Amino acid sequence: MAGKPLPLLIDENLHCGQLPLPVHPDIARGIASLACLEQPDATVLGNLAGHDPVLACTLFRAANSAFYQGLPKVVTIAEAITRIGAASALRELDCAGSSGVACHQGRLRPDYLLPLWRHSLGCALGARWLANRCGYQAIADQAHLAGLLHDTGKLFLLAALEQIAGSGEAGIMLGSQLIEEVLESMHVEMGMRMATAWNLPDDIAGVVGRHHEVELDSQELVLALVKLANKGCRKVGLGWQTDPGLVLPTTAEAQFLGIDEIALAEYEIMLEDRFGLVAAGEFLTNSIMGFNV
Image: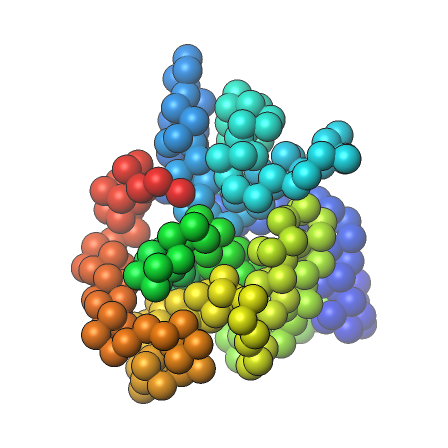
């Protein structure tokens, strides 16, 4: 690999198709505990998968695979579990969870994985909350998934950079400035490629590819919800990129959705309550098992 450009090294990791992607260890343990049960609860299984981007993608990849060619793509986690069966879904998720936890040993992921997971989950819960508050309950599930998966490209890039740094062959120092520049500049393109490889629903793939675009039209409610949720997470500090000076009511997305200042203040409080006062493990224990996705 010596002497190759960094984007080429990343691309090679994509094409090898064998790079394990990080799964939050607490969620992976939850999946493993279900694998010990004689009859795992499909609802709990779906709730866990709906709180981790890699696990959600694992289900879509299986349920929209070539075996089901000619059938409509499943667009929700519940549909994916129904199509492939709870037992098969659990096997897929347990395998992904085991691989995802095993790959956490490098030096880069401890600094970036938890902030990235918190941001993705914050956007998911935020987009759902905003959809319900704005009267778009019919698309709340879709908004949740789009928020959860909008930054999937960053997960792959983080895993690829870890692999490159650990190989010792690239001959480069992956400092924080370089890592964050790669994650920001390449995550949309990489996310779109992963959306195709993972057979994500078309609407979600559209949000993955367009969540940094400025223009919105009247048909893009889910995109607007995710973009506003994203900005709210940045304002309250969910993720390594923060912008506490953001004034949410003045954003194009807030005006597009017609949501007022009071509701947006409540949205910020919801995010702070969910993430600001409890550790990640406590959040998982207290919230995921009873939260429907």
